[in-house]
Image 1 (cartoon, one colour):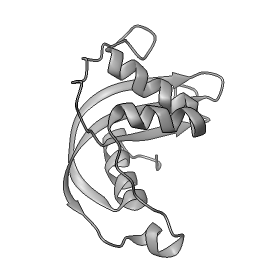
Image 2 (cartoon, rainbow, N blue to C red):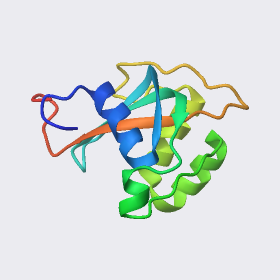
Image 3 (cartoon, rainbow, N blue to C red):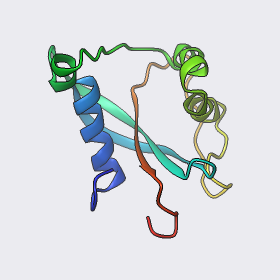
Image 4 (cartoon, one colour):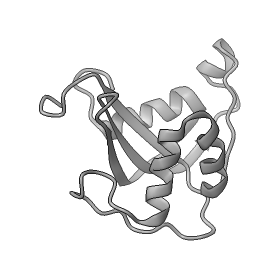
Amino acid sequence: MEPEEEPGGAAVREVYEEAGVKGKLGRLLGIFENQDRKHRTYVYVLTVTEILEDWEDSVNIGRKREWFKVEDAIKVLQCHKPVHAEYLEKLKLGCSPANGDSTVPSLPDNNALLVTAAQTSGVPPSIR
């Protein structure tokens, strides 16, 4: 997140910059904290309204975009970003992601959601 940026705004900006996708920010699915890495991640649903053929990261660094069903995303993330896989597992199970303070509704079995996240790092939660 940029200074003075709200989590939802950061999520919309990041998905545009990194995946070349524009959309309408939906509900907050959960807030996950990793005390070891001092990260707080906000996970949202994004309703896609536009998919760009080329975007800055695809042109400059060759970034690719790929779509997954939640189950498939979990399998891929388990190999590369296991903490993020845990977030999706918790969302899928409808478990509470953050210190028992919030609840997350269960996701449908056959859904294909684009989930985007805004992450803060290195800042104590009391300051964020």
